[in-house]
Length: 120
Picture 1 (cartoon, helix red, strand yellow):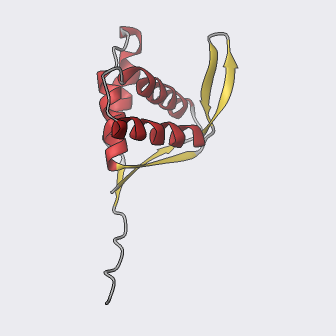
Picture 2 (cartoon, rainbow, N blue to C red):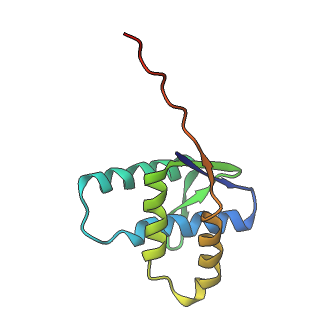
């Protein structure tokens, strides 16, 4: 199954992308096996594909190129959700995080087509 998130060309989508990216970078501080590291890499690749580098006073960051659609395998999506939930967010962004988590829960579920059985 694939989970699909759609980012519009508006401030709310840009804010969601920013917090999603931060959650991925900050939420995965536990020890990991190679499969988890591979999932992180796939999620980073997917987020990088819909964004571009931007130089700010805080350093280099990623900026959403909207409109955009993010599609992740269910296991990768679950990892991203877990990292967002595990991040020690500051109270100043609490409303944004509640919006982000609520929005993640509405991600479209797309069944992946099954390959036909091979005939022998």
